[in-house]
Length: 202
Image 1 (spheres, rainbow, N blue to C red):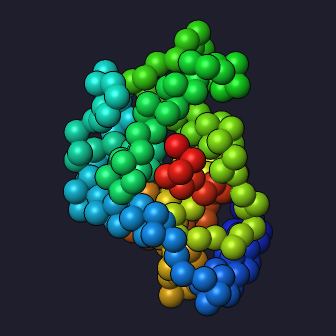
Image 2: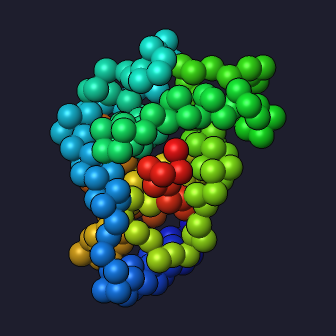
Image 3: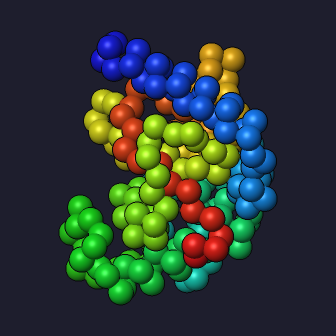
């Protein structure tokens, strides 16, 4: 694992340099700024990690604001920042093309209570919407990075805020177990995908 972490840190250094160069060339789009502000606003408000299955209203359903999982950070940021409801978008797309989504959970039909709260489903949805980008960068504020946490290969998603830590790692907002936090991207993981989903893609 040590070699993997060193390689990831080298990757993050390259991403950081690319991010700085990209920032110097262009301003961050307004939609990205809104998304980042909405994600950062969850820090200190969402203080618990709670993966329990909950029956939700539809559309616009949510678990209590003091709790959630990594995907809830993203869902809430899109709702509050851009007025985009991923619960509805994912559910409608799964209803149209259920076979295009993972069957990991043994479902036979879409479930609007949980489908949008699962990282592999978000990966499938974002890819189908043309939002996938090369993982190597340059990363931009508002980008979504999906990964598998080690050990265990557990799916996880983070929202890039467009700044670097003192060690040169991208800073993200995510819920990895202690509520919504702003901190460096996890290094004990393997990154899977990078997505940039602006409001006009909804």
